[in-house]
Image (cartoon, rainbow, N blue to C red; front, side, top):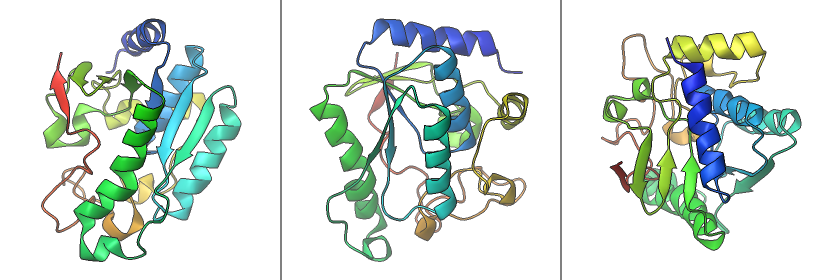
Length: 212
């Protein structure tokens, strides 16, 4: 079972250590948990979400619902200026790079953000099993939920009555853009519904990292 106090301690230390700390979210269920934890830790900084233009309507509705619930934070939706309409069908990796990775990186550079708090967990993908709490790359990346299981996340959401993605119980264990995201079957890798048939499981945002 996840250690709630340990996760909160990591968050509080991050808030105290990095005045420019930002939270990023893809609006998975772990993202809803993280937003509640940072709210409990009196975080009032930026919460960043990249609106690629291809999100499920349920994703955008959840974003608005979370903004209403955690109004003390600065919710910022990012996006490319003029994304090509069907680039995802011709070059999905370039689509991720232009519509997701670049808008976030541009914001982080422009605002000189030195540390990012995110909701990745070890159970979310075989490629994330070795996640550490602190990672170093272009900037510090802090992962307070690495030990949380899906059961832990579900129990916390239920206990606190927190809004979370309505497609989760339809098998969407990892949320992304509708052209490249589908439900996961029992026993499959939780991220197998992402980038289907493309031979990858990451959009590129988290690739420039090293363990502390």
